[in-house]
Image (cartoon, rainbow, N blue to C red; front, side, top):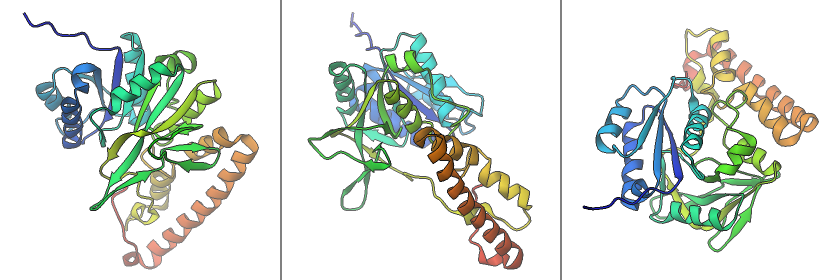
Length: 301
């Protein structure tokens, strides 16, 4: 009788919502790399309506699908996944976005690095693919400077982006899950790693470990896409500055600036950004009233 080796106490946590084909591509890559068989893969599906959960259960029954409420967003999904994995006895978490494709040995190298460097959070170097080459993306920061690691480098950082990050379970046991109230979607990743490094953990990005990102890497920052003929000023204001979906959400900006830079300096940065954004809102609102066809409206609402 063929014996199945027990999986390592490593939990790959993938938040998903209505991107079935992207999610299935991610899982297929994990299967080809052997990570689906070696580690526990947990999908937090935030009430997708495109059949994501059903497809995963059919095609990849070895993965665990946790249902979400429909209002988890990125941070809530990761928090739920971490809480589940901790209860199962996880020693390490790996955050992985479903539009992030690790190389065949990326995740095993992250785990090995964390085992040989206790209390250290580890991130690979992230690339986007162009027609002719791979382009490094900044996925770490120290102070106000963002950076990526070159091959052969291990660079320590204050915080990391959450595309793909290995996190020892000791981090969760000391500081708890990411803050779903202050950072429901944007900035839930880098502020969590920042909180961990301030609590005494180390974080680094490793140049010899690689993942490739596909699809849009950063949210499209485009004020005009929030304005449509017929929408009231209050509707555009709420969608732009209050919705959890928006990268311009003011509560997130306030908490991000004050947590990263301290109350006084952070409040100054927030006020400057607030004035600039409100000026843009007034400009586009007036344009919508006076010349509605001049705006290149989108679907950000």
